[in-house]
Length: 172
Image 1: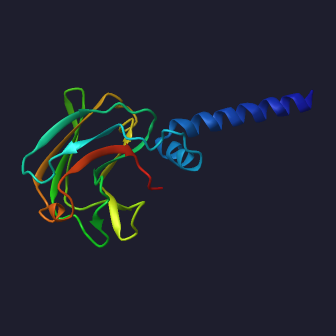
Image 2 (image 1 turned 180 degrees about the vertical axis):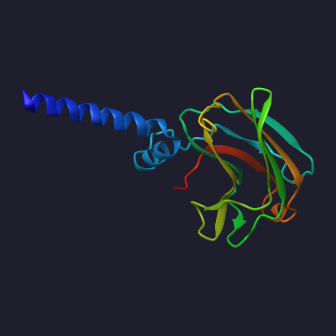
Image 3 (image 1 turned 90 degrees about the horizontal axis):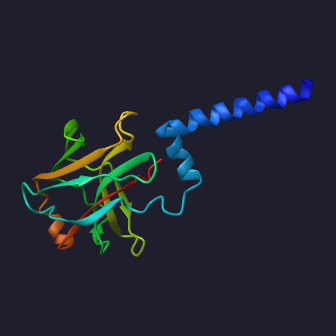
């Protein structure tokens, strides 16, 4: 009888810990890094974006496949950005819950740079901004608006076009 109560209590405690851990985006992110799903790093948005044009802007609906931390980044298909390059432009990131704006951030430096798979002397991705989904633990119906306030003219020295990419962040 005591053994049954002990196992029942242990099972309930394990269930409580798992439930608590899986509801936190931060803990969930670390679980995803340790045990990644097959489609974890597949972007939810990846399309051409005119980062070289001042005031260019696009609005996207974010359809996340899992709750995690996501990053908004500049992606080079040619993986041609040289190591040592630092982003010098300015991009406005706006998050909306439906029609209500919930955050506005002007980004003028990168959060992280991700190296090329083909060439160790090159970057393939420049991460500009990171955010969790659900945002602030409650917003799930998110829209993202990206506006180029000041283009970085050096970007065109390395590649003729870039993509906006939104995917689960690979940073711990």
